[in-house]
Image 1 (tube, rainbow, N blue to C red):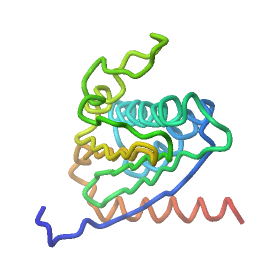
Image 2: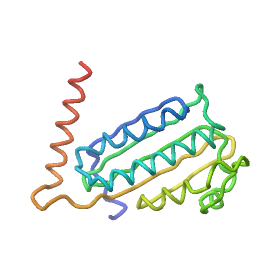
Image 3: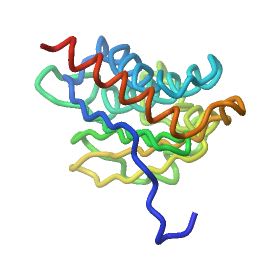
Image 4: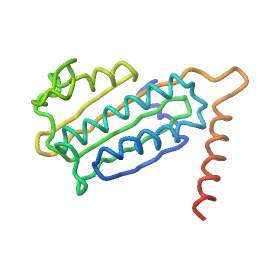
Length: 176
């Protein structure tokens, strides 16, 4: 895609939650629920679930030192008409001093030996793109991108948009 072309956003979700391990499941569930109108495969859904889980776990365990009920993890998930998703997970934790080193398999700052240092490697395995920005003392932002397999020939991007609008209407009705 050319830089001058903008991707068409069909849905977006912004959420934040307390940085406690119980909310890792919440993050996975919310992101995957937003993907439902795209009719992704079970394998694609599992890939996204795993990558989101790893990123959120990193925020809670490493960014906030094991979790803090008074700290927050932020997620922005954007679905595009071309059947792609961008998930941005951000914390305001301790940050990462050397992002390149942290992205290497088996790298960990965990001295207890309980963490494997495979989080970023797992994210890179399951997503098309993983980008990490971090500033020590200010926090870390992880951007995950994935494009899903094309729908069956009879379905079009317009069908996806229609399904998304229908899902949005049902969600709004649930809050009334």
